[in-house]
Length: 163
Image (cartoon, rainbow, N blue to C red; front, side, top):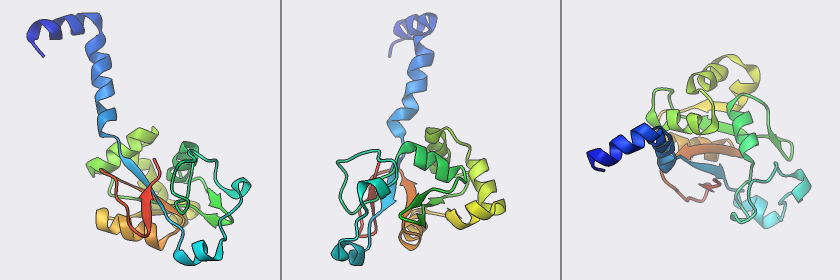
């Protein structure tokens, strides 16, 4: 962008708005756990009334579907349940740029989620601190139903994007 355009945008106050929109281009890809094969074969998929508040209907049938409110709640230490099972949330260290972006996307502080994982009996059972993306995958698999985040979409037998 040339200097003249930058000056016009600055005077109009539009540069600030443009800068606020930039982080949206780097939003996290939220991932949810997929139902284990035994659950799929048994046809035990819950009725729609037993699911979390649905955020989308077009996702794969075997991926849990949750609303943004459920996502915010679980990372805030609020108990969210799916067919009687607690929803778990996995997150990387608070100083990790991925975590900072992910929590900012939800309007939360990474420090708060970390503190909840250490101190709260509810959160200790549902919030899991891990160190890297490989552990994130393992955490989502191990704690089904679970959510986590990555910089880009990943699909495995245990997880797939849900937002």
